[in-house]
Length: 153
Image 1 (spheres, rainbow, N blue to C red):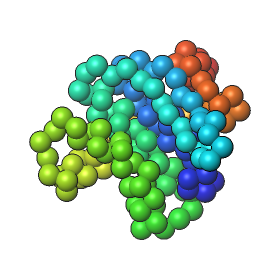
Image 2: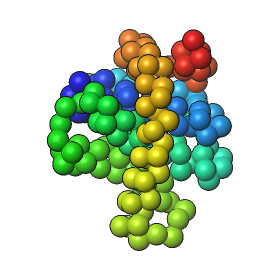
Image 3: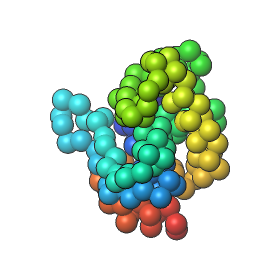
């Protein structure tokens, strides 16, 4: 798998969805874009009314990317990984820090620390996450119920 290919983007969005699920938020769907100019766009839609749910869900993309990196599912240097992951997660970091009174440096460190901690949980369930990624690549859209069914199968 290459950083930023379709499969990688699927992993990122599955990370958000499963982080939402683990924090007791409601996963509505994950959908891949039909935009021909950028076919790798994807979005996980979640309801996260509580602060802890929002923090967990927003860090889920980076958490799964970090789990992919630490489990050697992507083969790049740590420096390259951090550059790419920071680009991929820039909007997620903004959402993570939205209601926090932190400096930019503090925000980034809190986001990374939170995601690294979450990645430990993801490493334990990579086989389940991979099934969801495969199904997402096949169908291009999964509902929250479909995600739960695949996860629990």
